[in-house]
Length: 383
Ligand SMILES: [Mg+2]
Image (cartoon, rainbow, N blue to C red):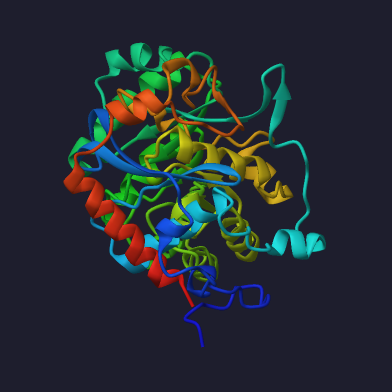
């Protein structure tokens, strides 16, 4: 038996797609004509790194990104490869529950908006930990945004007073902007309760991963209910593979899940688990180049827009795909990068600029490391 959990609704057990062997040739270089590995410099240290290595490959459907973090092992990274092979059209998209049984998913078409620039999806602006007087200059760089995600707990519980001062300034400046918080698992359960008491005044859309463990999230939600604190909890770090959203739903650990295309094994697999979990989803990036962000935007445009999702997240769900701003260089010219303009990015395919690929290319040693990693992941996906 595959090690998947049953969904809370008793729905058919979804297949752990990444564990289904694929009928692939033995060598990935037989099908992938063009492999590039680039190193993208970052504006500031993020997730402990200042440069992000990213592999890019192309297939019949276009370019795709393969960028599991370097410390990830083959099994985990092979899910990311599956997503890349699917997005590039080198393997067919997995059939999704959403498509196979449309009656189980009440779908509205109002999520993506179309304008003169084509279909776009909304993205949130991000407010890092900063002194109150930097709130306005930082957010003014984003232009018009309807939703802002503020990082809290960046320095643990010790920074709660600073977090509150920043949030008060934010609310003074932007009383009508939708506000989310993200603690990146930075609180202990006791700290999280106290922080939630204080954060409840700020009219939050949701609070992302206040505590590290999924069981702690579930306990926190119970305690919030007991205290009558109406804070919606979202799970992000708790969701790293296809089985995780089901576990979050089963334990009642969150009301919203943050999903990323590559870790879940592709757009089709992501749609599957979102629908199986029954939870509203917000698409986020895995710190990707514009090629990877394009896959995220496509998933965001295809999310089931359920009544529950509309209640919590509104008609136009802002996704966390504005991370292109974290890099000082991308694989396309500045005007063509998937960076947000007035709170939205287009749903489109990205073709890397050959000069950029060359300028940003890693040294031969790193290229070999990535080629070997790709081969290992490829082998793991094979029959
Ligand atoms: Mg997060």
